[in-house]
Image 1 (cartoon, each protein chain N blue to C red):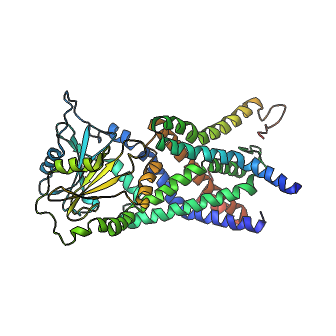
Image 2 (image 1 turned 180 degrees about the vertical axis):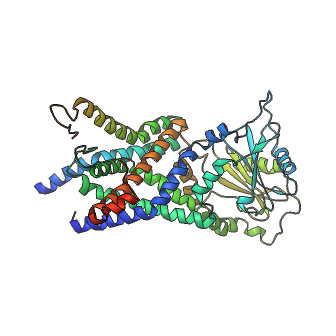
Length: 80
Length: 378
């Protein structure tokens, strides 16, 4: 029982963000098709969301490297 | 997930990806400029521009048809089309015969007001890119082959999602292990970019597959729905003289009130029977503008013969086109489409790198020879 709920929690942790992004993408793709002008704005945000995640991950790594240089007192920065 | 199950999915993911890699790279690379083909054609001078007019009185369809025939003596009209996004232009398709091959058709743009010839359409470098993207210059066989590659791509995506669990369940979302080896860093990027773009890649991949079946669907429609629509006219010869296109357009509008003509197919062309005009009508909302309704009209008298909604599979084809092209949400959506296409190239490239790197790791004795042949990018 306990193991099963742990597994569900772990599954949510792993797949929550990808499922939300996939749902946002689908909503955006259909919004521009079904709702015309307003739907376009929705599409720009939701279909663009995966791009923002990739850009954010890239920038976060760069910022961490700048904050904690490899040769600094803390050694190499860990991202996670 | 059991180790054996993971291995099985891994084999599916590896081989569906590897088999389709080269063709997917071709599709992604040619798809990138095609997203902006209007803009590129305009920059290169291949996009006809309508004239500026003080009057808004448009030339009648028959005047445009006459101008199109005069511009291409000895040939016949196949289609006349009106693009919703380019109201100043009417396009006319001429060919050596009504059922002439699409590759032999000539498309010309005419001014919607003066019916003056503005120039050819669909020529220039983008035509080569389009042919590479749709059939690799191999006709219907090329289309179906690329469709099969699209299906492999979909299987690779689904198997990739299944494998995402065992590979990332101990990591937080969007973790890139900078302290690990380069191969591990690229595995993290591959997993992250792959999983965040999964819905877009599946939609674009599968709608691309549906597009490769367009000709088969059209043939099915002709053999079933269209055949039953023209059954009362069985045995009638092709029209000796054609009805006025003005009458055809007016009667089609009366039959489908509130709709506009998207294009007219002339008798004998692939979109209609040998005896009828087919007027394909579109609505005025974002969705109904893409769902066409055919109105069949007698080729000689212009009388309406029948009108029915398209079957579901053709409606699915029409809906799948904007979802594949990404041209229905303005320039920002096009830019996002291009960026997602770029990310897909990264996923495909990193997948190939990971496969090569794993092979090299498994066969250290061959590493030097391999490195000489295909050095891993730094």
